Length: 323
Ligand code: SF4
Image (cartoon, rainbow, N blue to C red):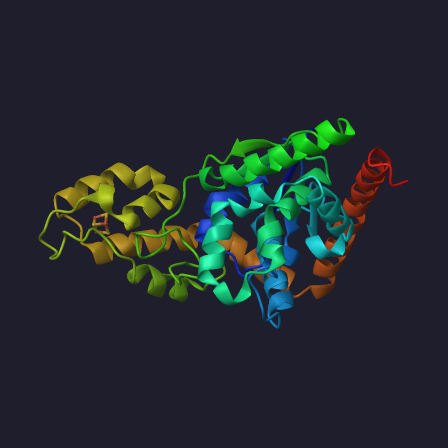
């Protein structure tokens, strides 16, 4: 089977955007590829100055990953810093990466603008570490959203450059565009994100989910219950598209005819979200009572990842005449 690599920052409890935009796809890929899924805690340090919550975030995230269906029997699930070979490879790859390539990366410029007090070396070297993450496992496929394509292209350029200098070593990782579109947050404007506070966590209770959904922005032109709505501009309607596919046409007709109010429409959405997530929430509660199981999963993941990582690193050092 071809190998897939994907990673995510330790942001703690996962939200609907993470689930619909990435995790659902990762779960499907487990049956078609040899998947390596990583919580990239070192990457998080490029923007984090306080690390007090780092371990809690990792634990909460892993709980969600396992409960949602990432299967440690099928995939390697591990934490980036538990495989220190990635840092060594990062240093070696940095020797073939022109600084000008890194300085022109739009996300670097954006991060430097957002945190001018902390424009650290890790921030500019981020794409090199990301390349090391992927090629350390000789991954051929990387599931990405359209917005991440430029990052992967840079990883491919760094890979090509290394292969040109030192001989064919790594496969050039290909993008596998995720079939799931970007999920907008409750504000209906920005991508769902924890930082923006426009998210709905998967692990919320039914009541908490209802409270959140009730705050969602709908069609701004529909000011009164009697006003006909425009589902095509309403984010609640978009969310129905994920959780209530069978009733989508009915909801659109009723909205346009003002036969349904936004509160009622949101309540239908709340029920669908809660019904869909009920098995996940039950599973999460069970796994949460077994902290030793989570530790076993990440230790085993790191062990399996390191076997591949050591082999790759040894080949790289030989190619670079470091051995
Ligand atoms: S009825 Fe539903 S789809 Fe129509 S505007 Fe209100 S929330 Fe959106």
